[in-house]
Image 1 (tube, rainbow, N blue to C red):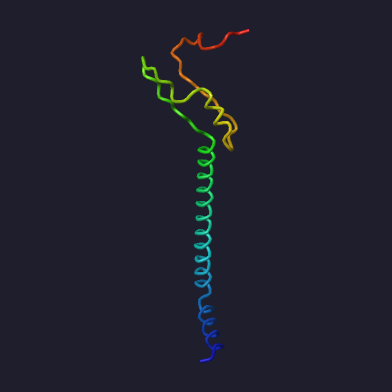
Image 2: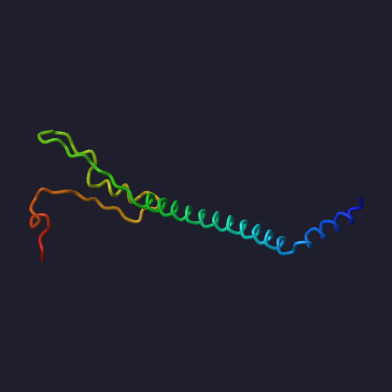
Length: 113
């Protein structure tokens, strides 16, 4: 058998049922295309979710300081100047210190002018 004879037989087999060959080829192409699209969309969505979580966790830090027990002579664990140290860290745009107060709302604000 000559390679030319093999190609002739293969071509004759394909041309014997051209619709079946076309549908088989179309099914294969559609299946591979769908697989590539699904992997691409899943990868893109996954990367966007991970990127958003990384951006959120890198820019948002919350420190909760437990209150000093009543009657204790201990100092608070974190003082109000701690935000200055946080501002010096690379990538920090702003820092703030927040506190809960038991005072009435009118007493929390400074004097108005």
